[in-house]
Each structure stands twice: as structure tokens, then as C-alpha cells.
Amino acid sequence: PGTDRALSFTVNGEQRTLDIPVQATLLDVLRERLHLTGTKKGCDHGQCGACTVHIGRDTALSCLTLALSCEGREVTTIEGLAPAGELHPMQAAFIEHDAFQCGYCTPGQIMSAVACVGKAQAGDPDGIREFMSGNLCRCAAYPQIVAAVQDVAGGSR
Ligand code: FES
Ligand code: FES
Image 1 (spheres, rainbow, N blue to C red):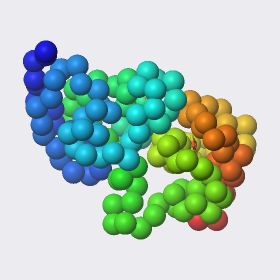
Image 2: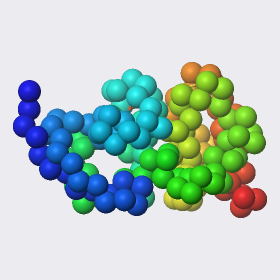
Image 3: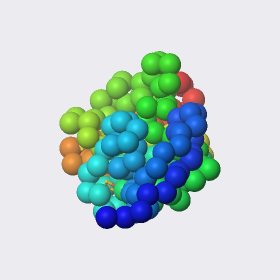
Image 4: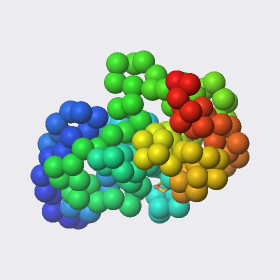
């Protein structure tokens, strides 16, 4: 049992204010309070990357992020990449390259991939693998994921 505190932040471009337990993680607030279930809970311990979101321009593991630390920040989830329902180029590239099987890791992979390109870290496969190394894929779709990221980084989309 904890105390609730007010949190005001921006999620996918929308201002949100809600009362949350002080110990709530960003992941649980996104999924359970804001019903943004695209962000996945894999390990809940910072080891799989399934919960990756953007805070500002940086990637963050939402399972390790206290929601209250996002006060005043801009959080983007996988839902925020396609606000009008039209796929983000990275989403389209993942589909085209078959960069997933079960899909559980995919939202986190895509959030990291977008940041990888945005931060100009996608120049070569090794750089992509290094940047994306915190995103595990049990289905081992790694070659296809790298191909999708390279495709977007190369500007063909
Ligand atoms: Fe956050 Fe696995 S659920 S890293
Ligand atoms: Fe299944 Fe990556 S597609 S875990």
C-alpha cells in the first residue's frame, strides 16, 4: 500500500494527468491505466527490451522507469508511431522484411530501431546490432530485424 501522487506528462502527443502510486512503473501506468498495451511486459526486470519506449528522443526500459520520473516529459509508445493509423516507415519495413515471428518483442524492437536511425547509429549492421543489443528476440529474427533497420536507414523509405 503506497501513497498516490499526481503525474502530468505527455503521452503520444497528448497531455495526461493521473494519480498513481509512487512506486508504479511507467510500463504499468501505460498498460493498465492508459490502456496502451502495445508496450509489452516481457521480463519486468530490464533484461529483454520488450517494454522499450521513448522518453524525449531517448529509448527507455519502461519496466525500470518510475512513472513519476516522467513528470513533464514526453513519452512515445508504439501506438504513437502511427497516430493516424498509417504505418510508420519502420513498421512497414518490419513487415516487408518478415522481421518478427510471434511478435512479442516487436514493439520494443521497433522503438529501439526508430531511435537507432534517429541517432544515426544505423550506418552498418554491427552498429545496428550494438544499438539494438538490449532487445532480445526469442524467435531469433535478428537478421531480418537488421535488414529492416538498414532499409529505413538507407533512406529507401
Ligand atoms: Fe522491461 Fe523486459 S519487460 S526489459
Ligand atoms: Fe518472437 Fe521476437 S518475434 S520474440
